[in-house]
Length: 288
Ligand SMILES: Cc1cc2nc3c(=O)[nH]c(=O)nc-3n(C[C@H](O)[C@H](O)[C@H](O)COP(=O)(O)OP(=O)(O)OC[C@H]3O[C@@H](n4cnc5c(N)ncnc54)[C@H](O)[C@@H]3O)c2cc1C
Image 1: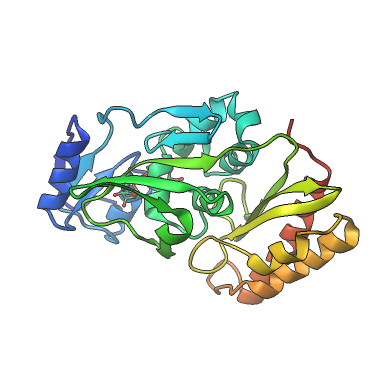
Image 2 (image 1 turned 90 degrees about the horizontal axis):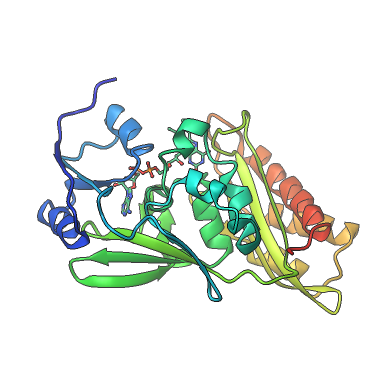
């Protein structure tokens, strides 16, 4: 399918890129890997008059691992995350989640910033951002600001980004040793968007779960945490009955949509099953 006509700019600085977006007042779009924007343009879902290619902007391709956590620049690609051996220990949940993103070719071009900005409810990266209480750094004409993941995602394909703002990176808080985690999703074919997915982790104090973080994606209009399922896990010694109870709490808590891929009832049931299984995997696995 042919793309609609558009102008193209490839600025060398963030200031220039932001100024171009601001000058077009919502008619211009940032271009990262094009893996979502190009199909959207081909289908005429988006028709920007100008594409502002981000690829020459300095400093947006870094992966930094420090005592305070993991920083991913906006132009970090899925392939970069999967190839980074240090991330296996520094953030195993992130790495596992990204291994489920799309197909080989798309993982070579698709980016962290593009996925966050696109805000597909079924995407893994927004799910991980929510589960981990990530902070998203952005720059616009008014300057830089940081937005918590829970405030960033506002609905399907809708975020708190202003039209002149560019995501520069995302910060995931430090991942302590001994943390238990699980990630599971269900798609009809590997690499497809998930009908439902669960990412979770908890720490342990005195043999009991604490600091439970459970997030769901592909169910509802955005990825989000499941407060009642987390409450059902915190303070409990994790055994079979707790895994079942937390799964039931998760299924009861979601508000699934129905679409051509699955009914709402199916997604609710899937949420419960995936939560229970991810929790069992977490109980059997400790971060080194
Ligand atoms: C067949 C197919 C299957 C896929 N399956 C999956 C999947 O299973 N899971 C999954 O998560 N994704 C999937 N994707 C999407 C893929 O992961 C993309 O990488 C992701 O959506 C972002 O694309 P991109 O980085 O190329 O951004 P682009 O397509 O270039 O941009 C996407 C949107 O984000 C905006 N944008 C990009 N970068 C920034 C920035 N730094 N600041 C502000 N705005 C920005 C653009 O203006 C545009 O609106 C799939 C894509 C395809 C084509």
